[in-house]
Image (cartoon, rainbow, N blue to C red):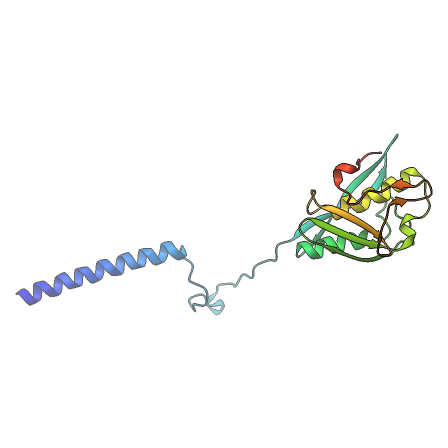
Length: 190
């Protein structure tokens, strides 16, 4: 009798451990099998869902003419990661603007290179960037570059270089450009 009683006690303990283990497994994986297990087989009518890459957004700033002012307006650019998004936005800034907008950046201006880290963005442009235009055009081009370059981090510092040298002034009227530039240094409307 003692052996049968012991066997039933062991059986009850094992059943309780199995029940607790099963509940713990379910709570841990919430009904989903752990990665690498073969319990989800697409051939059994289940579909495999691949994760969609997260899109990152950054803005390119173009100029819009209002009745009495000019205004820098953001246009969203999407990319797979932040670095690619910023690079794409900066490159797009040196292409023709979308319909209904214009750019203060002289069309011959070329992006020579750029680099960015968490706090600073360095943009090296061809000499055409600092040539010609009136005061509105000069403010527009600097505003477009600074706002586009800081669209991921509005607190970032922007260093504008021309042919590898920091610029001190832009255009025929000589708009002074202090280095580094930040968003708060430039209005969105002018």
